[in-house]
Length: 242
Length: 242
Image (cartoon, rainbow over all chains, first blue to last red; front, side, top):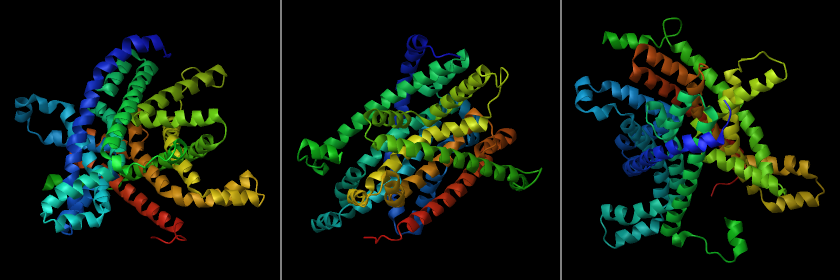
């Protein structure tokens, strides 16, 4: 059990890179579904009606208060058990762990982002909403045109760090037989008993992916939040602020 | 309803139920988390110092440590550090003649070390933020009073940084209790996750036992949130809220 860089680069890395699209698919699909679901969660959480805010609060607390590992096991083993056998045979994709993983990751993201979005909605300046009302916009128009875009821009930095956390969390899907980067690394590790080559290789793949994802998200943030960026007075002060 | 009643009965205390196993699981999880947190706090203090001191190479080293740990999935790091740690340590012990070939390293110690090293990176940034938030003028004033560096740290920086760092410290405590669930992937040390999974696998009542495990984690998280909230309030008792 020694670390062998040549084996890692020539044998392990190509297989891991081949599995990278699946990791990205998990990340992107769960991020899209989860962030869309986060909007009703945040709205329900802010609603004064206890029929809405109590379930939303329980949902958020469940997602934030339990390890993602349990959530995934619960959905994969628990809900998987509820699906009757004829359905499993009729729709073979129901046996595939990837759908359960996307479902679990989306719900988890909805819980975390819902709470973040709630704070951001509260942080939207009240004057803007009043101005929109004065323009004669309906409640839906105010939300869709003013509150939501403003809130998303306010919580964009937090949301992008959540996305990085989501990318890392997709590795847990390997525990329910999804062969993304971590799952592939584990398969090679178990087959060849090479612990370091496989895990360090996977670590490098994740590191580089996170690096590029961070750059990409920073770019999006700069694009969307041009007006919110601090105006650089001189090189030195800008660096001090950063 | 008889079947359901008997299911609830399996959560009883003693030989017939999993109640006492879950209770011991909580104890184990909290023990692992607390020990790992203590190690992480030590590493975090060192890391914060390394990142803020005037030695360029130490700054760089601290930066590399936190960046790498933050961008690689926790699951991967735990498996990697667990295997690397146990095999290196047993290798060293064998080489020194302190142990026989094939010596077993206590899995407890290995998982605690793994979690400690990972959370050391997160606490490094939390503590660094806290130290940096202490107004510079106060440190200058302390210097003008003739305090030397350790005095400045203990008398001026430490009491004040707690206030800035405490919410981050609380968050990381919550995360470490949740991430301790990964321990069940590398070794069965009888933590909450291992008990829940074991019960679910034995009885095939996945929804019931995984749900019970989630509830146990929610109780632990709820208590943690309450305590950190109180501590935060106490740390801020001298500060007027805007």
